[in-house]
Length: 182
Image 1 (cartoon, rainbow, N blue to C red):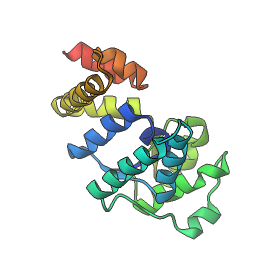
Image 2: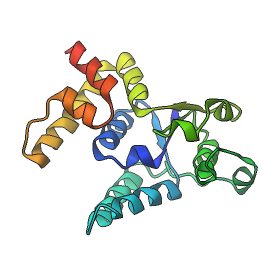
Image 3: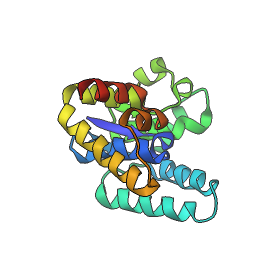
């Protein structure tokens, strides 16, 4: 399964780490566009000095790990597509160019399901997507989340109960499922 990952999913660290950990486990093939990655870097720059540099380093690491993940939208798709927010057309066009099955985003209103269905692309949220992966691959997802939690604890110097960390990362359904299956 190919999944185009929107900038709003790549930008929050914990969410990104869980999503990309699932990709690293071989549960799906990630896709993005150069513009999506640039949106991430620009958003990180707003957090303060040095944050853009950190983001660009993380972007370089993702591109090195998945060199075939970056797709460029076709001009014809950029011209013909319509979405409620024209600034999001490039995301759907990239999904089409990459042959994505799923567009992973937090921006549901900007990607109406019926418009994506016309292009044979499903929209999913990170929480529901990861929850469904957990149902099919519980050991793999649990291992990914535990690695992310351990790193969050190492970096912050504080304990992060699993469900609390997943809630903070906007992955509450995944957190509840992991806690219930533990």
